[in-house]
Image (tube, rainbow, N blue to C red; front, side):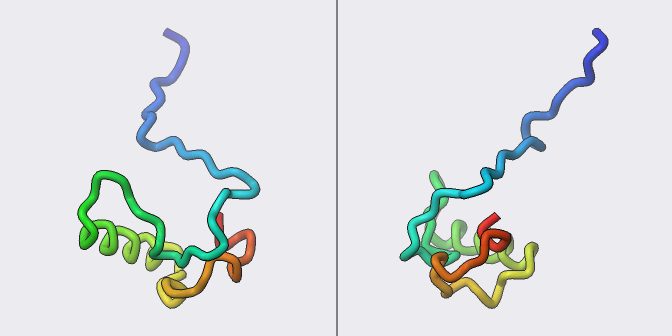
Length: 69
């Protein structure tokens, strides 16, 4: 075949200027097809993973570009 198989579950896209509403907090975004409790748990886990767990109530407008990414 000559080409390596690509696992599409491991590919992500991160724009230079992500489109977020400035009024949102890190936990305000809704994860589709998830119950509220599950979405909150996953959001908090993700914030912990990237070291932003203390920022969950901070408005995104106050985040640096790197924090948004």
